[in-house]
Length: 89
Image (cartoon, rainbow, N blue to C red; front, side, top):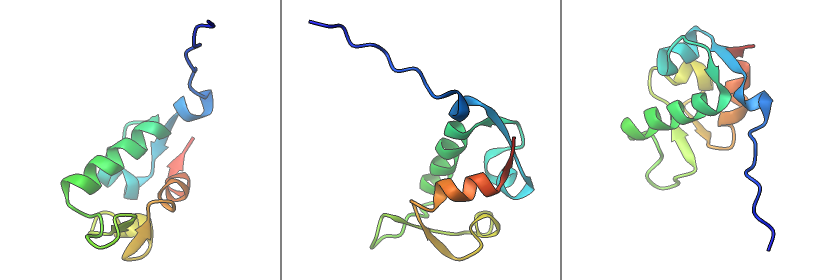
């Protein structure tokens, strides 16, 4: 049997990105990898109970997330695209 090779993370995902002021209000201003930004956003969303009760794929914006989202609600699939618009490499 062949041994399973451990997958190495894509270097592009591990490159630290600097959040802009809107995103820094949620995840902090320290440059961190995209994967950590997503994790911190989800931690914030869950801690503040912002997942829509009827449709868990939707995320409701609060005062900190509304400037990032640009509207009152997004789907979780839109989240990754919004991160790209709110970071500097």
